[in-house]
Structures are given as C-alpha cells and as structure tokens.
Amino acid sequence: VDVNTKKATFAMACFWEPDAIYGAQKGVIRTKVGYSGGKKENPTYKDLGDHTETIDIDYDPKEVTYRELLDVFWKNHNPTAKTTLQYASIIFYHDEEQKKLAEATLTEEAKKHSDPILTKILPATTFHDAEDYHQKYRLQQHPSLLKAINLEPGPKVKSSHLAARLNGYVVGKGGVAQFEAEVKKLGLDENTAKIVQDLVVKNEGRQLVC
Ligand code: MHO
Image (cartoon, rainbow, N blue to C red; front, side, top):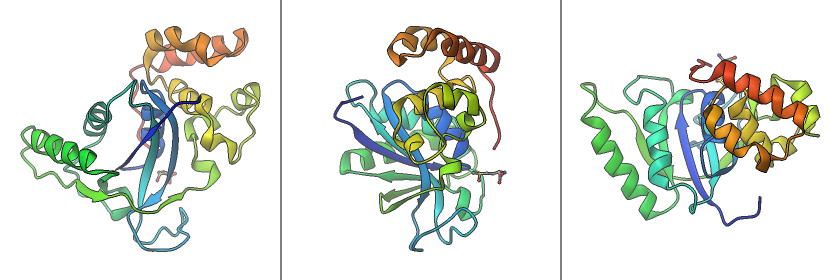
C-alpha cells in the first residue's frame, strides 16, 4: 500500500489488543508493537526497564483523522487505572497539532470519570520494536493463515499491511460489514477469505484481555 502516511503512537496497556484494534481501523496502513518512553537501550519484553508497551501506527490521513485514532485510544482502555510503567497510558505526539488534540480530548475524557486521568502526553521518542513473536500476536495464533498469505513468522509481519488488517479481523475487530466491503481489496483467495470471514463473524464484539 503506497500512500503518504503519518504516525500515531500510543501506550494503552498490553500491546497485543491495541495492535488488533488499530490494525482493523479504517485508514490504518501498518502497525507495530514495541517499547518506548524510557531511556534503557535495547529493551526486551523480559527486561524493558523504564519503557512502556507501545503501539506505533502508520495511517493515511486522507482516510482517518488523528482525532478518530484518539477516540479509539480513549474508548479501548481505562485511563484512570493505576498500572506499572510497563502498562501505562501514554499518548506520544509527533507534532504540535497532535499534542493539542491529545490535550483537548484528555480534557473531554476527564468529564466522564470521577477518578483522575493518569494518561501522560509526551513527545514521541525512540521506539524500540518488540520481539517478532509479539508482532500481530493474534494473527500469529493462526499459523496456517500466515502461511496462506505467504508470510512466515518473522520481521516481514511487522511491515505487512495485510497482516495488520488480518490481525484485527481474526479477533473480530472491524466487524463483518467492514470486512465484506474490504475483502476484495485485500486480495485473499476464496478459501482464505472464507476462513477469515468465519472468524470475524464468530468474534465480532468480543473483547480480549491480554
Ligand atoms: N499476560 C500476558 C501479557 C502479555 S502483554 C504483551 C503474558 O505475559 O502472557 O504484556
């Protein structure tokens, strides 16, 4: 998918579920999960130091606005929950416009909660890619599907648009109507399309806890 993308970067607890949620979001081109916000060099899942589990999104600003991506952020985690730094709620902004929108939506969100919002709004810093087995984690639970789209588990999973979309659809994100509208564009063969469609139908509306 060859379009001019912009970046959005969010931390909203365990990164597997947001990877799926954003992957199936309108206008999202690529996603990857990793560690950000801290100073530790070469963080790993077992030893992430002062970093937080973070999702990095490439989106097409003609198809989805940053504001819409922020709505998804607020709707899909509890920003008042006290967590360890690993699962903290953070909006990493890439420019002043993103910063302003983040602040404005935080103010709106605060009205919906009696507890204080703990979300931090920080400038995006180095994003350290997580290990390959964390990328498109939901999709990787379906090795035959990865094979059917000619993707081996490994670094390519990170940059694949198709993998980002399917990682959402296999757990029902995006929903049946959107999948049916998009399936031709995804270029799946008939058999694979049917397998994914059945998963969307089965899982639509389901919320997974990591
Ligand atoms: N309970 C999950 C959390 C994973 S999330 C990527 C696990 O450790 O298996 O932190």
